[in-house]
Length: 355
Image (cartoon, rainbow, N blue to C red; front, side, top):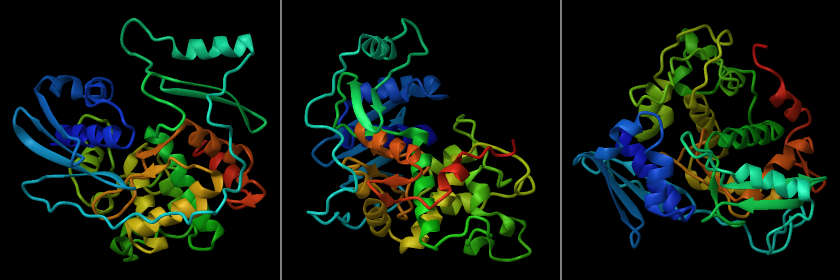
């Protein structure tokens, strides 16, 4: 079921958000990943471009379906047991509102005349003859905030939304910082989850800071085997954060580091609840407070069926969008004279965790 859901999600998102070929996606994104190499020969998929849906199964069993929603990406569900996910119409940024920063460049690709830089780009795209392959999709070079060189793989371009995978966690970091700047979240107080509200619950003491630093102590094993809690959360459960909230405590909060997407799924629920509780309000918040001020015009954040953003690994954005986002942190959270992140947030974010 996890394998089927994983395949459905990637095929749907990268087909209808990123515009890639389903066969390319399966061969490059799905089949080589983790335990998928054992199941790929039995995986079946059908892509319906007219209805923008994908249906997958493993040898005819464990059917999963993914459906595309304009502005929200794709949501996966079990057609045998789950209702068809519905999300409200995506909010649009008001037209005529300029970004806080000037356009990065014109419509043409930026080529460098620097021989050393051109050689470096050639090296970045030089593929290995045997696995594991590099599969570079985009490289952009900025100097003093200006784009001086860019290159893209075949099928990708300056306007192609590219899946950020776990770089999405940094975008979640920025959205949290904005909430802190607005006085809507305290990173060092107990995380405001109703499920952990009882002071006798040992999870009650977990803070957003500990979730952000992945030191919550929760049992959120992520080994990408398909049998781990994280895999089930991401590709089987409709309410991903609700599932993560049921995780028992394995270590005292703040004492052990363990990488898990579940931490950022819980942080994503905090963001959703803080801005109104719906996918539409989260999308509007992200556009208004982060994407639009930075001029990230091709950013698409995906959601689960409950309207919680997939803030661990499913933001699509163009290479230029990602470059703008990186520049925000180089500029200490400032963009075009406007403070996006609170003072000290970048230093806080870069401070080592548990040494």
